[in-house]
Length: 259
Image (cartoon, rainbow, N blue to C red; front, side, top):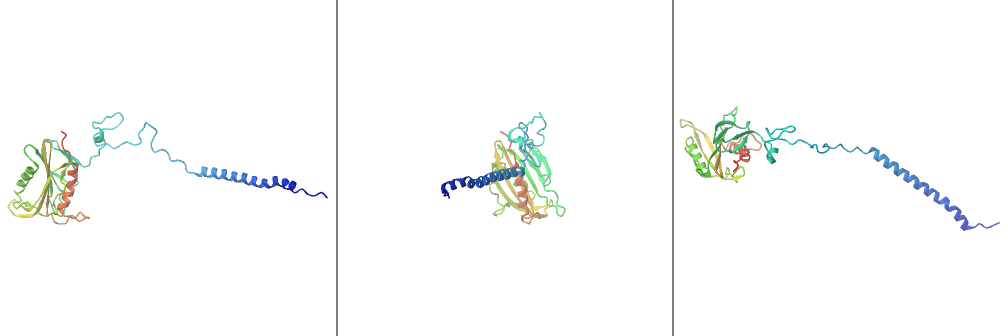
């Protein structure tokens, strides 16, 4: 009997040993392809573009009242002013050209003059507080900030004979500014008298004044029963602090005339 050739037998088995490996590789590739196709089919579609194709704009920017709109409609304002949103009722001095906005739900007009606007708080249904703010202007050639404050104090003393500077620190004004112009500030306290001299209530005034160019401006805030806690919290504030907080919006919005 012929002896079997071990090398020949090993050679004959080699093709059979590679065949299962090849089949496994083919099956593995097919599985990978199927998985990739399934993932691709189940993937969510890309969201549509939020903006139309150029040159159409993505959105229409807000415009201040009276700036004009519509295709081909020009605006009388430009730059940052064109995109500025205004809040509240606008007022400007016909004599000096300064302007600002005030909240008509917070203030009623009590006096409107070319150089001055007085706003009073709407009457409280439970108690008529009669708090107010006066914004007034004067020529800087005739009135410095300190002189305009003293002129207002002299006017106030007609109904508050004991009016005096408040020496306490609680109500002192820190960093007084009107618009973006630094100024000075003073706080006064006294007792408001009726027309017949009868004392009505404690009263406190905070006054801020500043000068820019040919214009001096003073803003005066009056509050009755100033140290009582206001019923508009939280947070808990005295009536005078609440009044000053409401006037802050006017101080920040104040516009000095150009030039």
